[in-house]
Length: 166
Length: 390
Image 1 (cartoon, rainbow over the protein chains, first blue to last red):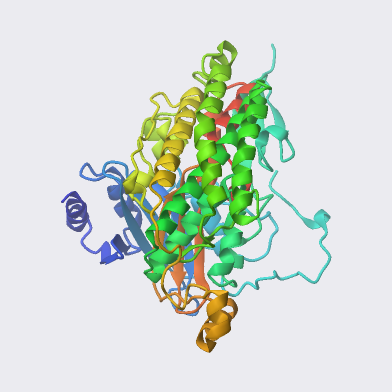
Image 2 (cartoon, helix red, strand yellow; image 1 turned 135 degrees about the vertical axis):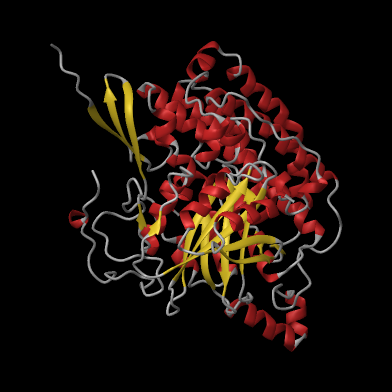
């Protein structure tokens, strides 16, 4: 089994990297530690056994009031045998997560979206700014403490106050 | 000594060739693109946030508005995910009806693509033929659901109601007619000298790069990676049908064009098999907490009345689990990451939009080409802004 080889390779290189390994509804899932996260993701992408070369998506889940507050989910796919792997990482509020956009280019926009809507910052990202909302937007809409109707729904909307990236 | 200077040009968000409200900031040296920066978010409606306050059935119409050019394919993705989370097995007849609707939606999305893509490049007539054939699918949608663009025909655990004889007849007519229509598109474009000159060797992307940039669907297959969710992770009885995955090899605009043109005929093949082998049986799962009871039953049985009331007021409840399921939308891998919390609302719904990642690859495809080629490249990756911005 090549998937087992990948996990063994990671175990050999970084003994504490994989915290948990589960199968959820037929879907492989691993939880990684924050300490060697970037290096482990690099091994997942360029190992010769089963390279997870396509980063499908990144998302954050807000589990407030739990600590650590967020779960970051990376959905990976190997174009070798078209198998999927879900990588989970727990993040504290305001804690910077190493960006993986130098490994997968698709992480560039994926991380910007997580930063914009969930408010998880990424370190070493080439261009970390809001993507779906505008520059002076306040708050992060997908957090559980952000009201559904918005913070200023009862005030008139004035397009002149909107600042955007040029 | 002459000074070299670049100019900045804002393309969009109201430019007709950007297919919606996509804005691209182009940095130009003469007519050559030095740098391109896509700006999105002009159509952001917060569907993911909105979904957290709706019950599972109420989210289906929201998913229609993602990729509005092929609405049923989005319904398919969402319903398959919820059923995976709740552990529901949909009856065979409903699965086949879903396949028919999803493949019709794929053809409809490709119709919009071929029409506007050719119009952008300068071939005026294709759009009329494409929209003539698209009209037939819109009529089919209207016959089965009452809506033409966004049918919302799917339900959790099945479909809204059984197919009418007229629907089956209309689908058969379409399957019989469309090869002729498709032949017409091929005659207009495939060997057209102007078309091939405008599309060959434009926006080329290698297979490694396409994978690294997160492309999926026809844009990835144009580069030669045969990744199709319908084969890789079969859902809704797709393994019953015989069809091929078309792939290109160079990964330029022309290859992506050929892949989509072949997808027309493969989708048609699937529809033909599904409508001819449509199994008999119910179209909704036999689960009293998910399926709405018949009106006859409601009038005779008090428990059916209570159930009907509860389904409308509360809706089905999902367990405390997380699941990721993806389907092959018209544009690529359309995935839903759904977190249930034991209530009737999702705790978190993340939509993996194929167009989002396609748009993020635009700078890679555009740099080094002329401004006129930028139009061809936007058309060839086929983005729909409703899905990018969500």
